[in-house]
Image 1 (cartoon, rainbow, N blue to C red):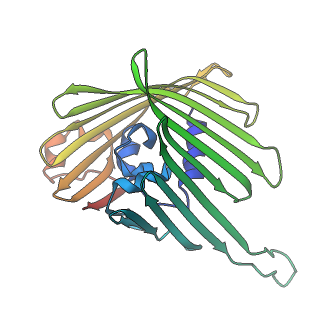
Image 2 (image 1 turned 180 degrees about the horizontal axis):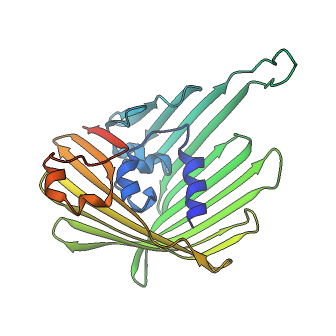
Length: 295
């Protein structure tokens, strides 16, 4: 399932929208499991209608605002010409244009490359039967993706998520990936929310792989009225190869002050020396962050 998630995130998010991904990464890495998070704008573009915000990770920015109609912009990479988002009612659109200039040949006539224009486009709509997002880009071929999420009471679970990606490169065979997850949120205690997800994945990449079960367990808890602790654990089992990478942990902190929110990743030493780290007497050891302002 990790293969499926990585392909989906690359196809749906790169070059289109910068979102507050640090919170999601600390909670297992799948934004679609957290419908209240602005990282959903990359998967379900219509979710831009839920937010007025500005966010940065220190190297890029994304801002969206509006009343009846929403508009969003992000900086993107050095070769990104334009990255726009739009939303109204139950619909949303992300559009990005990446313009890579031509490279002239060297004195030996080698190394020449043609100019390339890459289009990233996503459209989403909230339907009576659930959330739908469809995605396209033409980087190194034709790539399409789709995501569907709905409330679905089944056994222990309350929600269902289905994802599909087809990558058709200019050279080589097409790669198809399919994922299906059931998940639920748990009210563990006051100001503490848990997540449990169980999924299935398939890809024909390489020799092919079937993944089951793909599990995610995550907890988000208010440590103080201004600090939140997060932990996520994922484990995938390959039925095809009868092997697993084992449990993959992730941890994070969130700090809020009014409309400002700072999310960052942290290591496990936070929990062996919590007082000094939270009070600022010891480094948190974070390597990435998102700073968000919401209004």
